[in-house]
Length: 216
Image 1 (cartoon, helix red, strand yellow):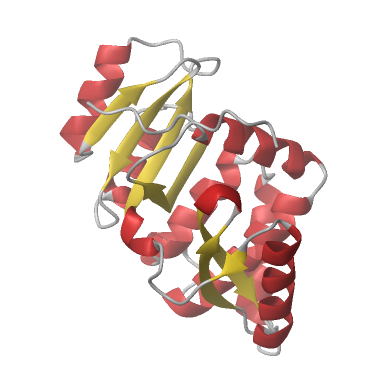
Image 2 (cartoon, helix red, strand yellow):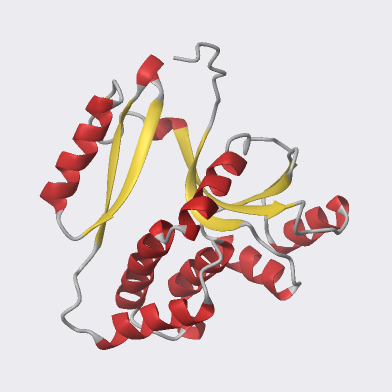
């Protein structure tokens, strides 16, 4: 069992704060639209990608009626903006490896915004593949200890029996890691077992961490 979600908790707490302001809802709304179009169906039962995005939406406290509204809008609006995923790689201060996954309807505008963000943060955009080899694409499910009162061993066995490849206990949460292929199966099994998920998504997990001691 390995522990590599050290910073995931901070990330997801921030995301929930953003959700209260509606920022994350806008982003997930676009992801729902892409999932409907690329999956070819507005029915989650027939669209595994849409099911995964819906799970992510619920983990971020997105209301069911808002989820349904976004799905119906994407399914019925043939003239809706065509969003696409673009990945950028680069370096931040002290050589920090950074991967940016963008969802955009304007590649040029997004490229400029991402480059400006790197420059402002004393970093630089690199070439494709320059840092991605230091990450693994995995399914990651975070279960908050505040929301789950069950036994850690029981949760671990449920996750592993469903097909998870790793389980880790952190200070305020549990992390379940899967292969990208098994993510949907594991997430669905936990959902059917009534286990609350603070986050559930396929993401890039760094292979190593470096502790920064200089506040600047």
